[in-house]
Image (cartoon, rainbow, N blue to C red):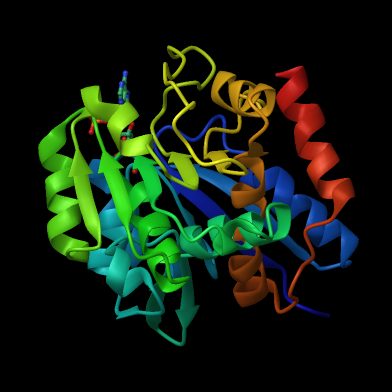
Length: 279
Ligand code: ATR
């Protein structure tokens, strides 16, 4: 009999996570004897929970807000770009060691390459709004793909300054009130702030100074079409939604825990979209 393999998503709060739905779909599809559960762990209890993963019967899991930096710091071994991003969203056991990686960059870039394949032919500056963990992962991914100028704008300017210092001179900081200046001649815009999310204010921004054929992407996926994406579509730009990043970032973790590289299918996407729309 094959042993039951259990993975989880660790966060605080964790109620709205769609990760169990994604991994549950794959477990069923590939006929794997396993489960993927939600674990709501308060920041105070996170280090103990993390260190005793094995005692909880877990082989690993995803790490979400607010634990990504702590997971990075606590891991016995940090792999791939988690080193550059200094945050981990995927962990797994390797013997008694806990390994950590960051798949947010992979998730964002894979979705961008699939849904707007011409984006990197634009050869123009990229604009990133926001300076949290997601911004850090996306800046890393864009720089790895050869983007030579990244304009970064965040409500709290010093968080943007810190990121610019971390990534070097290719990242230039713009005042939050200077969004329009940052967008002049830009070829891609990425919103990594929470503006536009259900229950939050929309992102007020004038896109008219962006290059023709620009890509406008949002990492917010609830709603699926944020006001920013609707505005981009109406202006003739290519909108790239946030759901694809969520789906693709899940792939490497599933493969680590359950031994099968899963596919992001239309059926999976439709399942999550239906859930988002029904929520
Ligand atoms: P994550 O790690 O998931 O990216 P985060 O660190 O909480 O999340 O970052 C959220 C981003 O949304 C931040 O850039 C935040 O700006 P501040 O650094 O100024 O807090 C941005 N954000 C949240 N609410 C905002 C608002 N009302 N207006 C502008 N930016 C906002």
